[in-house]
Image 1 (cartoon, helix red, strand yellow):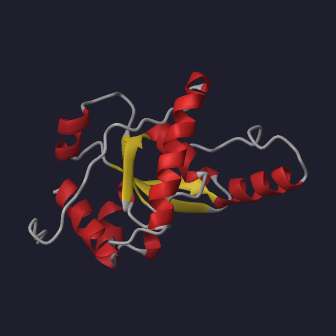
Image 2 (cartoon, helix red, strand yellow):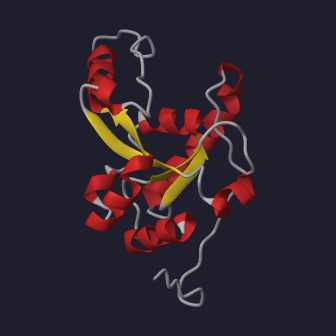
Image 3 (tube, one colour):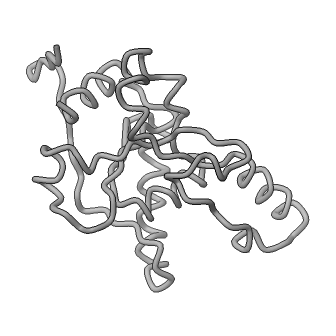
Length: 168
């Protein structure tokens, strides 16, 4: 079911980048964001994985696509219990605050696991904690391992197969 021809397709995993929500990580985050913007702009990045805190932060920077616009109906049903959400209303409020020269960080971000607390919830990530393949690589950090499909991912068909592969 998850036939990925490794002779035709290759996956490059870069584990050298780090992104943190810790205030002390600003300089390394700056470097990481430059690399991510270059890869995203070049159309060479399909997905990101990381801990929940960092991925939520990236989701509010509009990095990830609405999963319901890209996953198959079968995948939506299968993975919906693992969806993690961002609130589009927060992005709108932050954009309005930015336009007025106001502080955008004071606008709180709701819990990604509780879409019922959001005004405009959009599923943008999948909790991959139950993926034995990823936890084998990343270990159990105590912070949910998440997966997000980059908004302009060039290889969405392969990403969909890869999600199934990771979750089997």
